[in-house]
Length: 84
Image (cartoon, rainbow, N blue to C red; front, top):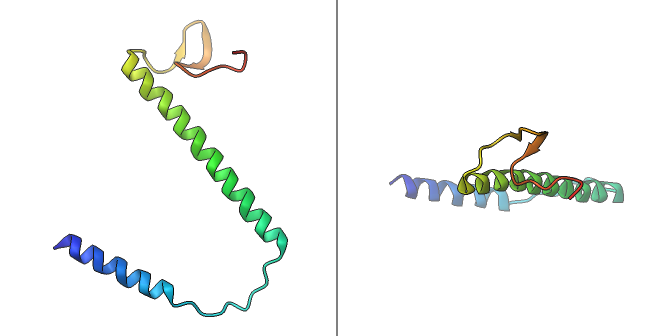
């Protein structure tokens, strides 16, 4: 019952969003480049977050504890350093 209600809500939402009216707005080329750079920035941030999360998951399966190594402060288990 709840799934059917959620599906109906999604269909109604898509129907309402598909009715577009003219905006009468001007978007200059700078707006397009701003949007492209924002998308690239979000993709880079998501990629970095997934990479850091992935190293923590791999560390759990390998039996390593999270956090910094005793001799090297700030280094996370499994993450490559700038020198490597």
